[in-house]
Length: 197
Image (tube, rainbow, N blue to C red; front, top):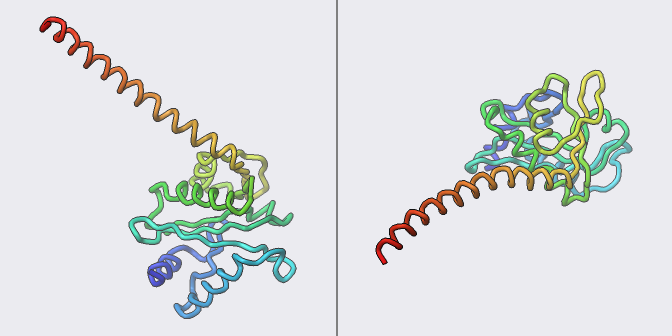
């Protein structure tokens, strides 16, 4: 399992669209030490070394295979409000275009809520269309833009409402179809029943 994660991280570029993959280029032994560091970072509070924000790293698995990873910064500095935000994630190139970016962001938002983050900031490069779409479909609202990035805030309450709304959109037509078929089926049976008796 650990070896598969290591291989996946070597496939994700060291730096791409603002995401920094610190594990890219590490030897396997260095990677194991890096995992220990990430574990320690997740339990820290306050700024580390005067600037580094505590963060927790997560892995996205599909059919027991790692396809991506993400991290949640527990709070923001002024610098992170311009570039970095609360949440960053990456999907291995061979697994892109399958909706996994949207999927991992949704999971990361749930985890952020568990960490007490009511609104999460995602900063996205202007030309990163896929990540922008993933943020918006997860309930994000564009609140600003710099020369390089779009700033999108995602409120956990808005995300819940969006999911309920989407659920209703999908359920209501299905319910109406079932109800319509049910009515047609039993009206036909009802006519036969009356004739029989």
